[in-house]
Image (tube, rainbow, N blue to C red; front, side):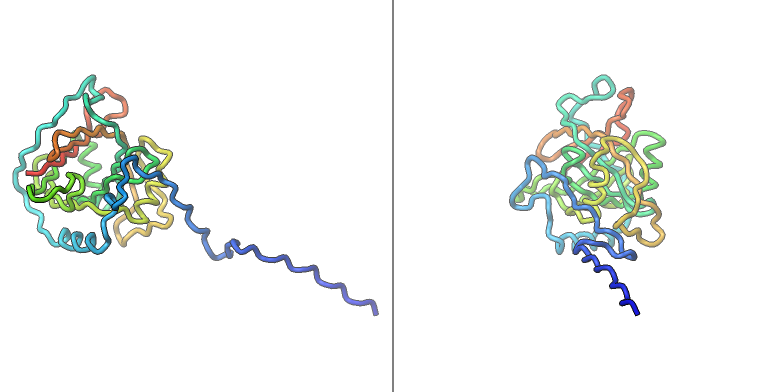
Length: 247
């Protein structure tokens, strides 16, 4: 009898191959560091401190009291540009029924300079912005003995159009935050829904939505700073203003 044919040699499996029932690894984050990146971790707070502040933030009650809106330190010109303002990239993002986050970057491709988690829900803020101008004032207590930069304050009392709506907390960027910024690195202005990807939606909080636009940053003093979100058509004033003030 003729000899049985030999089976073809088995090809070696590449070490980086992905099994059929596995998803490929997420693309690495390639965001750039800000031009004034601090070597001492100015933009990255310890996770232990963040968890402690966040637990306090969630325990505060929400009450309604009047707020004295700070006076902007610059005036609109031609309905679009602000004299003395520096253009930044701002992103509002969050799950539709969850708390909204605000990210401020030097450019769409840079690591966030600031990330705030606010007590207002994403769909509520976006709905209010669709109805007219929204003014958010963030206040914290001034401590003369400390030399903390304004945007490095950890917790703020939040007012929306003059009504107290809870609190806002500054936090370090998480992996989920950086993944969102990475997906939007080629977007300068726009709004929509992001694919969840590696960002897992908490139960009942809906889709991950975003709104990105240019902001004008105006520094009034070491205790006051304002971010104006500019209208893309240039024919109207800012749809959203965020005031930071120490009182």
